[in-house]
Structure formats: C-alpha cells, structure tokens
Image (cartoon, rainbow, N blue to C red; front, side, top):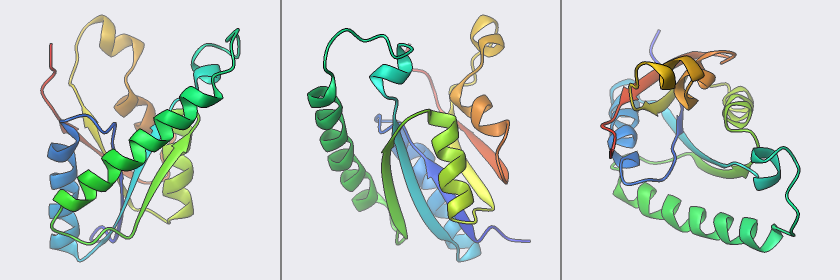
Length: 145
C-alpha cells in the first residue's frame, strides 16, 4: 500500500533539505500528504528539570528561530505541505504523537549512520523507530564532523 500520510521529522540544520527532498519525492510518487515536525527539546527536559535559571526567554527565541527556519525549508520544497509543527518536549515522543494524530503511515527522519559507541547509546532515528506507530524511513546524511 502506498504511503499517503508522511510525517517528516527535521532538526532544521542545513542537511534537513536532503531529508526533506526524499520525503517530498515520496509524496509526489504516492500523491501523499506531508506534515513536517521540528521538536525543540525543552532545556528543563534535557537537564532533568534542574535548570537554576528561568529559560522561558531562551525557549521563546528557539521557537521563533525554528518557525523561521521551517518557513525557509517549506519554501524550498516542490510539494505542498499539509501542516508544520514546531513543538517542545521529548523528541521521540513528540514525533510519535504527531504521527499518531495525523494517522501517518510513514515517518521520515535523518540519520548520521554512526557506529560504535554512538550507535549503542542510540540516536534520534533509532529512538523514533522504537515505539513508532508506523513505518520509519531513516535517510542517511553525512556528518559534519
């Protein structure tokens, strides 16, 4: 069965367009709908809720910047985008939530294809795969290292 509802998870780095183009090609091929999500990991969440300063201004700036970068990404695609989501929280859980809410049958995410210790510790792509409500396509991107 072709993929009709595709959720693209991006980190909004320069490499996001490579992953987005793969998702767009799938949307074209299957006449599917594309939803793009970017998750800002809450600083409180990332540091176990033990941040000794008020980070609300920083989080608000991260949201604003992410929305601007999302607009630039959407403008570069040659397929219509059903919706965009810029949210805050746990990366994998937010991607899973949006996929479920949209009835997604495919999540597309970038992967750096790390090996060794980084692979054992897990990556976002690996985290998305486990617990996903649908198929997951990990698009290999080259690491900037």
